[in-house]
Length: 430
Image 1 (tube, rainbow, N blue to C red):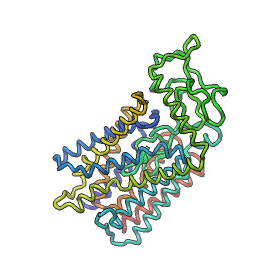
Image 2 (cartoon, one colour):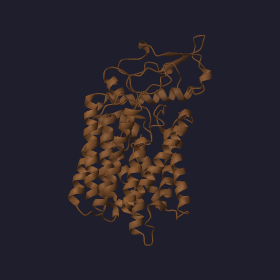
Image 3 (spheres, one colour):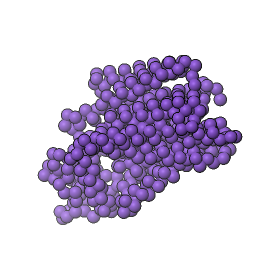
Image 4 (cartoon, rainbow, N blue to C red):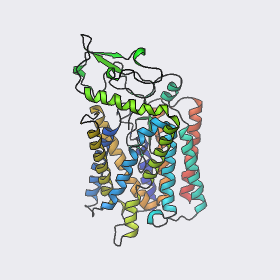
């Protein structure tokens, strides 16, 4: 392959990472564990196709570790968002991901060969501008966030990224539904209107009447006074429906036990509100850990390439092994979740197909990142692919969802895009 193919692969990765959550944007994903599992199944399918195209190269168990690292980091997306907020979480894990991946190649960390460029100062300047662009993305507030700040309701449901997130990052994200896609994932969005429709995981035939929670049942601090009346409640003061039968008693619900369990689980999370400093500290640590795991997810396959005699130097030969690690970890975490939920996991059928499409897009993007790493090296590919999806996601937010409004938001978006473009130019010239 030629160097230009590496840049093409990086461009494809940026576009798809920034677009991958568009299909699932309007669907509720709950706590995200089920969504992440569906997404990872799709990712594995992409890996299987790549494996067949590569004529089934030798399976590398060590390369699976990278997939496990990514999936583990991706689990932190929702807790981090709920503890320190979307913008701060995205900024921290995205920046740590970028710097970790770049430094791994620049200094030869973890036993890897050092990457080199013709003009190091240009590369350093480009990386610095890429970090600044990440800071600017964090200051963009989607319309739902603005409404919430003014007293409206917002919801931060979903899992995210790389990022659920993008690529080696989580974007954040592995499935955070969101308004603005930033580094490694997406930023949260409002949920479907459930004041008039029962949640996806409630069998509609069992619900006779649906009523919003009254003010007497819902305190101003956001706590639920009687969780038995609640089917589901997200953050930000969103009132969720309770169900009653025509006789005034509670309706018969197929997932009654999981409903109550969810209410209890949320109330336990809310206890952290009593300790804001501890809550913030845990969220900050979680974001840093996520960024570190995203940033090193390519290390295991690269270590094999650099340190194993006779190992294949084609990055695509490690994609399937890497993706097997992702599916193994995601399945393990989902089964543990089912055990914790006493075999009553929150499953959202409507999110299955769009989640699968998102997973296909993520798998293709990550595969392109493997190509970019091989042709361009970590110190070039990471700054480009870790920040580029932010601009693409923001563009979708403007065109399709009308989520970015106001001069302030457009100012930060413009600055972020310009800094990102200059950073990519400097890195390319280096």
